[in-house]
Image (cartoon, rainbow, N blue to C red):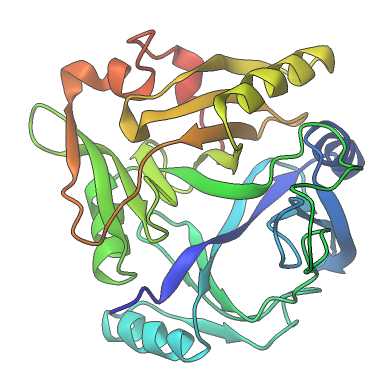
Amino acid sequence: MPDRILRLQHVEVRVPDLELCTAYYTEVLGLIETARDVKDGADRVFLKCWDEREHHSVVLRQAPTYGLDHMSFKVAEAADLDYFTEKLEAASVPVKRYAARELGPGWGEAIRFDSPSGHLVELVHGMERVGNMLPMTNPPPRPQDLVGIAPPRLDHVFVMAEDVGEFTRFFIELLEFRLTEQIVANDGHQLATFLEHSHTPHDIAVITGPNGGLHHFAFWMDDWNGIREAADTLAYHGVTIDVAPTRHGVTRGYTTYFFDPVGNRNELFTGGYWVDPDFEPITWTEEEMGRAIFYYHRQVNERFFTVHS
């Protein structure tokens, strides 16, 4: 059976300084602004990466604090919203439904519900298609007028939960995600898990921490050289780099972590592997957690576990 959920569609994050963050995401990261609006009394800016064909993948909302408002996943068909509504409500999870554009410009029809960790989760279908800045006939590999780092697309979101096992079961049993990797404590409970629908190492991951917390959201880069060059750009602009370019053990990916101007952690990610539906999950032990997260350094800095709620 084909997947009903295809991939991560977008994240909406809170920012105390909307104009400063808009400048950072457009001029340093190189995302493209597609719209602005006011929702529930707060200004919002809608952004997309250059190779994304749909209206937005990042939404910035003016708010007193920083952190994650919600995460949204794309479903293949409109009927999939009905399917998951029935499945969630049968498990006593309240679901709210929204018409197309009810939630904002470019938005598709959507359902929303809370995960056990208190994260607001959305499934959406029918986002407005705005194109990827390239012609549909005889296109070049990339546009010639890109600004900043210009990652081609959003890749994954990484959150925090007090009970990683409960969070993981919810996403596997009700949303039909597949487990790719896990870090397991000596007493057997899960410290972190990595889950996918897009046949990549992860579309969402969770690590032990406060309920509702955001660890980071990540953008895809096409290769390792792109990540190294992006770090040069980040350093040039004075962006706070959390972890310089290195490699993960989990996912086998290459990475660098850094912070937007108000404290939301970003990542650039590349590499990994292909995941078939019958993929057997990989387990890392508690003693090897440092190597799992940063394979070369074999240890994790304390700031890596900073909470973004």
